[in-house]
Length: 141
Image (tube, rainbow, N blue to C red):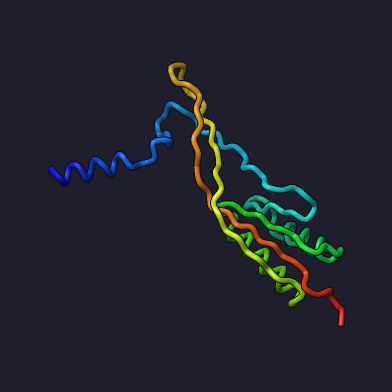
């Protein structure tokens, strides 16, 4: 009897907001971007790594005091790698400050049949925000 209650509670604890049926098509919305600017770079898995690295190097070489890298989900590893590559390239003139967190992402549920309504579901995705700032100018004594 007690085992049945425990098994039932475990089934009830599954996320009720998640729709896993075949009556809806899931359309993922773009996540909300916290800040905009020339020194803010959103790292994705689709963008060429070399292009992202070149953009960051250009910003730091042109005298930008800091750049901020944002990564979500699967792009977190790429974001960390980009920050470490910048630290190596600028050989000790830059420092890194890292913040991690969770971002709520909304998915739209579009009905595949006429008897079902539109809906939405919320997912939680890991995020990283890396601030790279100059501590000394390159070539200064």
